[in-house]
Length: 413
Image 1 (tube, rainbow, N blue to C red):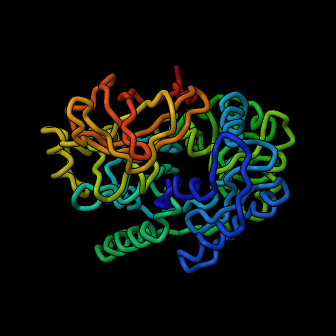
Image 2 (image 1 turned 45 degrees about the horizontal axis):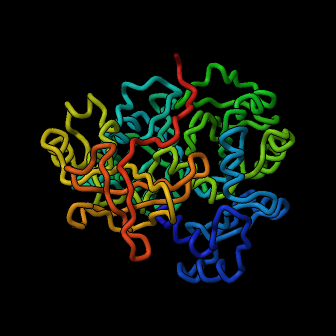
Image 3 (image 1 turned 135 degrees about the vertical axis):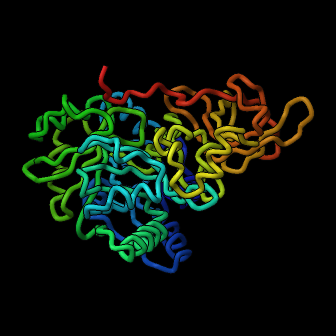
């Protein structure tokens, strides 16, 4: 997700498990940092209508929560029913041309050639040292068209990266073109939770029983032609719906007619993704971290390991073979305050610092606190006891398997 720290937003907003007011000064301070006024998404008026507490997140005005529900309650509602998240700040990109697959494989370790039409995959843009430029989802519409969703906090970086690499391909006589959609053209919403599919099915002509996790299809939703992709950022079943901007409110309001659906904001989105063990770009992964260190080695497709024709392949393949010095792990803190970004992780036997927290928050589903971070390789095993320094005090914690809450993706059994 965004390189703008969620924790920074939430700390400024003083978020807890109770309702909070987001002072207007927060908005002023946050867009004064970037020097630009934040962009309103196509659902801005709808957020205002339903009492969204808006903050500047990655240069976009987005709701942290809504008046009718605390962050914790919104989180739990998503786990038992279904919530709508406005993710229109994400960069949506259309790629076309007969060489689009080979171009994309030149900047990512994904095996697009081996993917069926209409399937999607999580992947990463990599630099020459194997560091993660961004994480994203690519859909192979067909051999001549791709649909890409990447992070708002890396919007300009991703645009420049895709423009530069396609220009290099064009100079070789290759056929590839990228088209970046902005918020005046396309909106994107995520409908997440166990009731998501049943509610959506009443409004769409897409047979959702056939739309498995990480597959995508174009169809109508509330009479509007949309792209529906079975994916999300919560660990629950759900979809992301790409909608023409001028029809975004119509589709969202149609979904909200169900009593099983509510709006949710950035607060619940962050705690849900943390319980699901999913990375936030800029916190848990960045250009100094490789997929192997991030426990994302599975993103390096088998065929790509054999052809070794992706950026940083020499570094990454060596790490797969020889190992790394640090690794991303899950962390459970049963009592007290959560471990936040950059909190030191220590060996309890001698208080030596062996790592640090990258994300952390209270866990509404489990109680206590969940976090993720990086530890020295010798401390990565689940069940390893550590100390985390919180507000100057060393508190017991334990390395834990992720996801913390079992994933409920709609997969073929």
